[in-house]
Image 1 (cartoon, rainbow, N blue to C red):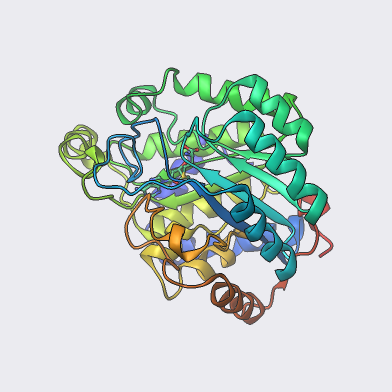
Image 2 (image 1 turned 90 degrees about the vertical axis):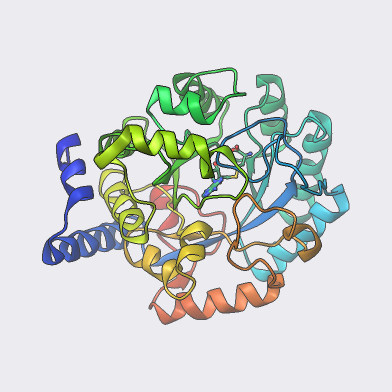
Length: 352
Ligand code: SAH
């Protein structure tokens, strides 16, 4: 079992042979513990309204000139039908922290979506009231994604000026969701200004500590006009100095591979951000170094162009069908299969 020091050493590894050995080990653990299936989760970007001011995000409440939208229930159900018709097992409803997505609206949408499609439902709607989380669970939601973004309390505060709680509060909220019966997912960006090697090692350790069911890790991509892409980012990077983690593909892949070793049965996506910084090979590289999930975007193109948490998001102008065909060809090309069914964590995953 890796300890914190070994995680740090893995992240800092520069020897090509030892890095290759890390990739091979991560892929072997993935094959043995969650099998060949790549589970496809259809992503539906339900709203780009947001009340928060996260310093990295292009949809922050204070981002100027963002044309805001909120999908109708019929729009959302339309995406879910497409997910079902494509054979996906899960639909992910993601959005800004948007009070306009009311508790009852979301609950009724989940109910109708489950009744009509039978798909597993993952929510990623930011920090919400316990009463809403309970109602959504009762309506049939299965999983919740809420990245803690960093375990460094000061950095967490600096990049989340409008969030009421600390990073410990956020982790507690995830654990409360688990008590409510959700599978819980979290994650971090790699290379946000101010993130040091020690912080990233601690982040990965924390995934294991709480036995997270899903862990998303993608490179940080500066979003023009946000504080983290400007003065705040420059100041935080100066503070980290030589310990600053780069927001590059290799470091992201090391974080993915080490996470697979520490959390062998968790669901790990090869993220859209990774595919964005390396459109040719990022997605495949993630799948070959520990990941077992992909989240194809099913959002209607007219909304998709407005959901720019960072610029140049992979597949921005593709229609859902093209994305899916490309992905399926890619997955088969890697000698993997497409996962069937909901694809819950661990052994449940194994038979596709
Ligand atoms: N509002 C929801 C969904 C956020 S989008 C929430 O806060 O949970 C999902 C993830 O995208 C975020 O958790 C963050 O880790 C990532 N993200 C946001 N801005 C990014 C950027 N500029 N570069 C890379 N990833 C980013």
